[in-house]
Every structure is written in structure tokens, then in C-alpha cells.
Image (cartoon, rainbow, N blue to C red):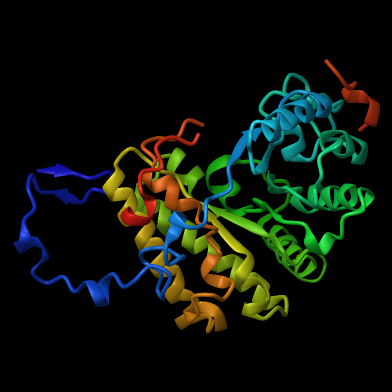
Length: 335
């Protein structure tokens, strides 16, 4: 018998007998209603289109800025910033250890002036920005906020996301700087800061994608991701925050393999499990309210990822600072 990527048996043919014990009202429910198995919005993306982002960032801040302007001119509705490895690890571009890596897999950001250049003439009050940064996420976010305020934008109106998922760095990627406990404290401090200063900002993107890329099955991907998510919640609670003060801004990031139906099941299971964890374990107030902020916490990203067949993935002197989406097939029906 054929097995799925998670090792589950797949029968050659399924008929009505396979659904004999299936109760759709109890086991599936309606989209937009707890436990959100079929999606966080009642109509999913038939009524509300998703944000379109192209993951971009390379070479210098000025080169990447030109790319962002090109993307905006061509209809992108949000920016997604890729940082080079020295920036991800907290190194300056002129540090000896950075040699050969500056600007290679993302843009080099060494100081506030680089961030000003990166977003020059881009109205940060009108676009949302996702920044794929983890260990130094708090520093890069503060730079972004500073540049926005220099543009005259109220920080309370800024929208976007920082990845800020340090636990998956220990598991799958390796771009960590500090030991786990201080790193978790920094994540919780970021939750607290954004609650008061950037209330529309998604403070973390808890990522299963990287575990999957490192070899995890769909079941393992969800298991590791939700386990990490619970650790972030626990760290925030231990810091003195209340669950409803930060849970609405937790977001998730999963991979979408070519095994479409298994991925649909994976996303459904993840939503259902997380909703129940929030309600039953953490007593989150918004866990059963369709229009409350929390149900939107995964930001709908998995909805179109699951329906997509596959996902691929000179200017300034670096020393001056010294130091497709394809085929979104009726995601609302599948999920």
C-alpha cells in the first residue's frame, strides 16, 4: 500500500464506506467558526484577497530599494525583506567573519542609514512589510520603526511581521546568537513592546517551513511548530503578559508540498489544534469569537499555500556604516 509523506496508508480508491463514521458538523464545522478547521474567514479569499509579497533583498540597500520600487509599481501589496547572513547573525559587513557572504542571500543592513536607504521614498504608512529576521529581530524592527517615524508615520499604524522565531533556528537553520533562555526573553520583550508601541504588528511568524525543509514530515512539521508556539506563549505569560495581550499577533508559516490533499489536511489539523490549545489550555478570550483578532492570527497564509501546487523559493559602500505564487485554486473550498 502506498504511504503518504507522514507514513499514513493511502488506499487506491475511497468510497462512501470510508466516511461511514464521519460527522462533518462535529469533525469539520464551518469556515470562520471555532475551531476554524476550514479556515479563519467565513468566505476565505472569495471576498478578501490575500497580501501579495515577493521575497526580495540582495546586495546593498540601494539595490534592494530599486527592486522594492519595481515590485510596488507592478502591483505588489506588501514587501518581504530578505537579509544576508551577516545581518541575520548580527555581524557588520566589514567583520572578517562576514567575508564572502555580504549581500549574498539578502540585503546587508549594518546601521540606521542602511534602513533609511532600503525604504527611501517608500510610504511605510501605506504598505505592510514582512522581515525575515530572527536573532536580531528587535533591533531591525526598531530601525524600521525609526525610519517610519522619520517619514511622519505614527508607529501605532504600522503593519507587518517579523519572523522572530528563534527556536526553529536551533532546530533547523542555525542563525542564532544567544542561548535559548535569553533568546526567549527577548522574544517576550518584543511582544510587550509591540503591544504598546506597534499594536498592528505581527510579533512573530512561528515557522514549520524550515523544519520541513530540513526533513520533517507534515506531522512532524506541525508537532514541532506548535510545540515551539507553546514555548513562546509560556515565555510571554511568565514575563507577566496576559494571553489576550499578545496572542492575536502570533502568526504561523508552513510549507506547502506537492501532495495537495495531505497538505490540506495538515493545515486543517494545525488550525483546529491551535484553536483548541488557545481555548482549553490558555483560556484565550478570543478563541471562539469569529470576528475577534485571534482567529486571524495565522493571517491566512496557509490557505493559499495549501492550494498552491509547489513553492520555489553597485551602490552603497558596505563599509560606510562601519560596523509566486502559482495556481491559488479555490483555496476557500479546499481548506
